[in-house]
Amino acid sequence: MMLSCRQATELMSQEQDRPLTISERVALRLHVWICAGCTNYRRQMGVLRAACRRFGSGGTP
Amino acid sequence: MRSMELDRQAELNALRPDLLRFARLQLRDAAAAEDAVQETLLAALTGSYRFESRSSYKTWLIAILRNKIIDIIRGQSREVAATSLADDEAGDDLLAETLFDQRGHWQAAAQPGRWADPDASFEQQQFWRVFEACLDHLPEKTARVFMMREVLGFETDEICKEAGISSSNCWVVLHRARLGLRTCLETKWFAGAGTEGQR
Image 1 (cartoon, helix red, strand yellow):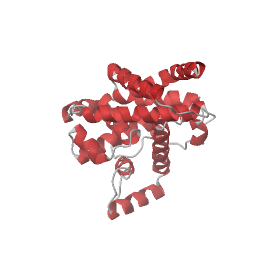
Image 2 (cartoon, each protein chain N blue to C red; image 1 turned 180 degrees about the vertical axis):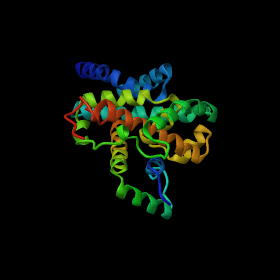
Image 3 (cartoon, rainbow over the protein chains, first blue to last red; image 1 turned 45 degrees about the vertical axis):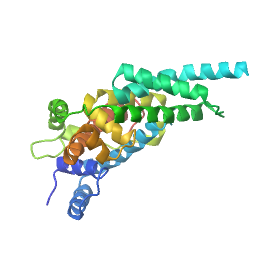
Image 4 (cartoon, helix red, strand yellow; image 1 turned 30 degrees about the vertical axis):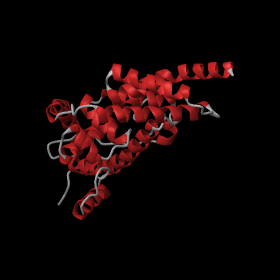
């Protein structure tokens, strides 16, 4: 299964809400490996989560 | 004794706008937000805690406020019906079309760039203004589901139940929110004037 970037972004969101299946994980890893845009997107998902946690705990300056 | 109480009053008043903005973003209901903040301030005034610094005081207040907001959300009827979420969809599909081409690849101009030093951004007040504006910019019901998940820390199962939607629908809504929020942050902050962001 070859993912499009659009599908990859869906999985990069869902991996924060549920465990991905093995085949989803493999497909996502392959896609991110060759796609700079999605590599950045995945890091950004981590930044969003960190920002929301900080915002929600009153840790903003 | 008296003057310590006055200090505390002044401190609370200074933080009130922050608390109110926080509650409004989560609840999107000015009256409910006002109530939550009032209750929080009342709880804070009647408590006997002492704080070393203003930042720990704010953290403490936000923690009380969060619990009030969670109570309010849990007490509400399931008003985020699937139909009202559908209203949010049209705009979101439009966003996806500007980001991806027919085959589902990033449009050249929309390819996500590298976000330079997010931790440094987190230390800037201006970043959080932009962050709040971007949250506020999300479609209402979408934002609500997203903030329940990411800011208030609900498990996805409970959100689905509260919102009266299926898990897969819930994931779709959360995905749209993340896509929208990161696109807003990229445009309004990381790609431009906010920092000396390199791409």
